[in-house]
Length: 401
Image 1 (cartoon, rainbow, N blue to C red):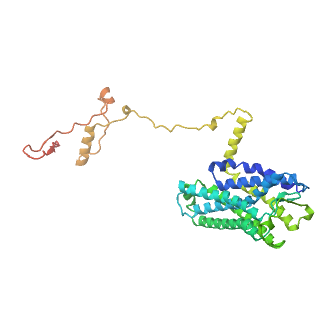
Image 2 (cartoon, one colour; image 1 turned 90 degrees about the vertical axis):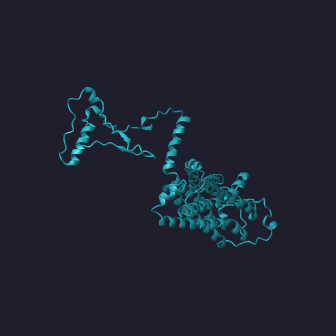
């Protein structure tokens, strides 16, 4: 038994659950698909390696029926989720659609549900066409889905993951091209596109998707090539011949496993923890995830440990009053009467005298100093002529100086 496989498989399980709440809140179907598939894949393989350590005895038959079908769907669901992520990122970076409306968001969710949920279910159903018997049991690895290696099996099970991985690689390349072309206004475009993505989140999605794509493309290509190297392709003659003795459970001790098959199993069981760790690095160490961890710890302390948390004053929002302008009473100001301003202005216009001191006379009473000066009354308005038949014209009597 390879002890490191179950240890790594179980260690990455809590790492996958930590960012689950954040992704569930954003309703990101593609990232949720990756989390759930990686979680159950590592859980299944960890259990299998422990239960069938040094053994090929058939047991937990219902468990094997369920987990073997799930493994067939997971090898399509994860590349499909990466395809959806890179397609969405390329659509944002290309500026073909400046604002994502509610209708566009609903259409995208339907597409992701079909590709990440419906397509794996279809592949799991089609697996029955190329399933020679119930399942296989390999020593130290547990129950494994049986595949009747033939051209229909290659088309149904090996081509779809490879096509999705290559399509994801194309979309990732296009997204990077659009970003480099519009990198100056890219952050502003993300804010105005109503996509809910920030620059850091965009690059985390892109980095995670590219890493997953490289792993998935390499794995899919490797598994695809194995079918032509070590064994021959069988003829899919008829349904009865392929599914004869269908309830049989094949058992493979380590000494009977071919080298290519052993290498394939070891690679598959290591890929799960690597992909889970890759996902946690990009989504479990972000700023949003750190805030969620703080909320989770606080919730556990209050509801599980029954601690009474006293919030410090620094947690409360702070507010400081704006600086107030100094108040100046009108009594303290030296005011100039309107008469003195008029006289001074007239003298300046005539050029007869210079600017005089406009300080008020000290003979003003206390009442006069408290009340502001009143302007001189306006000159009377009289009709210019009372003999006009039409509207009266008015003129101002301006005293001559």
